[in-house]
Length: 167
Length: 299
Image 1: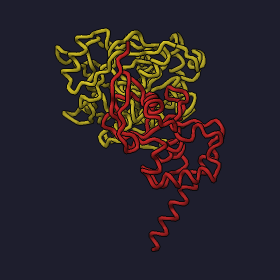
Image 2: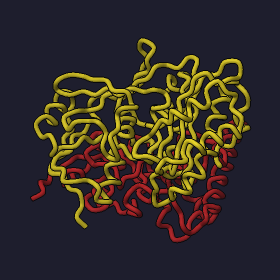
Image 3: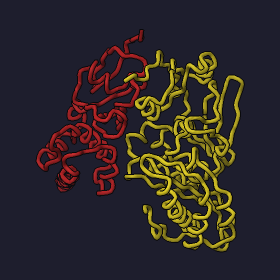
Image 4: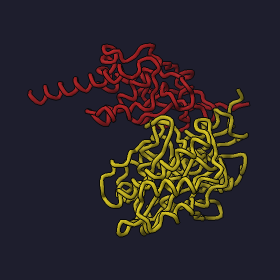
């Protein structure tokens, strides 16, 4: 019989004591043990990006990330994104306004990747946007809506910066 | 589907502990680093019965440092960490940075490790080809001590590096290249995919002639391969486009190319001379300091 043990992980700033098996994946634990189902299971082997979460502020595929590596690390999922990062609300709003999603299955992953893009670079070029989102597949929008949404976020950020600059 | 389910996942905190675990469990145990490769293989049922996984991520093997003319890269250095490192960007190993940049997406680069990329021994990974062109060495530790192997002699076959079940790769190192210049190119289905074929070369240029060259091709054999005929044919030559193509066509004429689902052997045979031409020209232009963008990055 498979032994199960209790692991402590920190998700969205809260500590969870969860039952895990050896070599469990972060995705399964998040969805089935913690109960946060916003992170989606798509291809389940690192190709589609629906399962993208932040571990210590870097994006990873949670479907292939062993939960054993999460001990002592800070995990942020789509549920805790807006609470942690102010800019996440702007991103979500712009995706809504600019047709950044249709069926919405890839959206949690895309939002996390977009946020990680903005954490590094407040003014990404088109190439940098494409590079930043190369790990996320969307089968509905053809990516045009997504890129439009991100450009709109950049515009808003620049405007707010100007406002602050001009007093 | 019967899924890969090890009984125990060990995260030892010192190399000695990790080596002792491997010494005890031998073939029942496997080393796990970042975990991206092993998961893909597990999903596809490519991994035999493994009872224990021994993680090397807590062994403090994540570093890039320069000592005695060598650049030392710890085995568990993440690819993105290496790409962002100052030392690697000033070491004159363009092939390695090219290869790192071509490994997409960021979600993989943030997790995959240099040691894992070298040890997985699959023809479709990129870093070993580039490392081999830069004459990298692999440092391997076991309970008995340490040994160093050239990456050229590190591979037996697919999934089968020359590594015993009680050994751990702790470091990849290579000489800082002072007069050599290198480049890397790959062709995959999309910009964010495994490669079909990849090529890395490092060369020295004197008076517009190639005086020394090492050329490594990955994705066509069971491990990255050097083609000595090809190298010899290019030495003391000025690399003209037609010359490189002709030489490359000849070099692979008899070679039995390994096909894959995404590219037949015939397709690879056709595309390879073009890729080799572009890669050699890219390195050559780098050596001369001329505009790199004259050579297309993609075919």
